[in-house]
Length: 485
Image 1 (cartoon, one colour):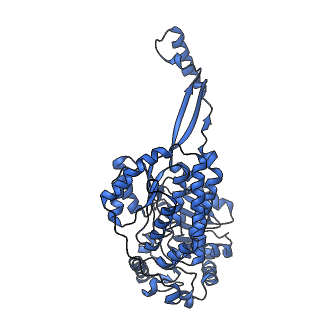
Image 2 (cartoon, helix red, strand yellow; image 1 turned 180 degrees about the vertical axis):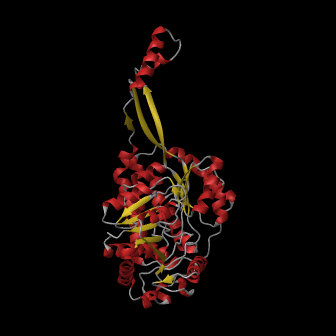
Image 3 (cartoon, one colour; image 1 turned 90 degrees about the vertical axis):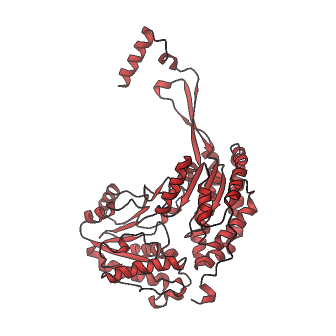
């Protein structure tokens, strides 16, 4: 890989950070628009989504350039993981928004015969989206699609670690929206804190559990609702019944795409001892099929880079710690800091107290652990915080069912990895430490909506439960309680 072709570009000059007063003015300016949007029609919202989808297509070359400039992301991978999910999300919402917006009628219970009931969705109002650096376009515009579909105003705060993408998104949003409806605010920690000091109606945050706690604490001051898309150590269990070729091919891609900087990437792998050696051999073959000979992977333009020197140093430290404690590197090596490159690294014979087994890796390091008894793997998974994803590779249905019944995770994929993110009819989200709430498709629309209960009394018998209580009403109440009991 040549420096000219593939090294991440120098960061653009950072925009001047808005003051807290400027941010507050933006926030106040969105209040009248938020009220007006409550009455916006499905057709009006669909038109906005179509224009956003068209702009994504028209600016796809600029998007690819920006992602490559920020962390050397391959252009084809940008199309697959940044552009495609957003346009698919927008298309899905456009096709279904009218039905999502219709009141959901509910049949009355026996106690309330004679009433009509329905659930109406209404916009939450002024929303804040704080997006991460690892998929800067996808994880900014994906939630934005849901927020627009639900009829909200939005302030979008992208990560300062991907400045080319942040600047491009600001330009794109300015083409489509007045700042009173949707705007991008660029900046670092101080900007994020100024935003979190404001009483947003809803906050959608994607990032680490540590920062998620900060966001939730800030939201609690105003009792703002939140959706937190976090992370954690997503485990993989490879049973002896698994198809090794499929397992290696899909698992290696999922782990090392985006250089492992994916919240739902497989973090560590439990493989049955009976197939451990064959599994490792299959992974090496799959790795070379994807990225070429190990000695020349640094030259492969389909392989991403680490986002910055700090993150690179953290990953190097994790790998050095494991190696010093006796772990073996089946592939890869201790990296230097050339071009922020870290080779796809498979690590075995790992002590339980190594950093690589204690921290979310978020990089191209794949620990492989063996098990003989499935109970051992399940117990270790359950001893950790609930993950965002859990992957099962097995043909044995009893094994699959046992793992599903014995563990908890935000989502699970069986005999594949990461594809659950692309299924727009599946809610995407974590559990506790890995997240709160869901996104994507209808779940995303609901995340940015308040579900309002509406009941209309036409000719119910509710008056019989009100004073004055005479002999008849007392008998009626007694009969009802006994009947229900």
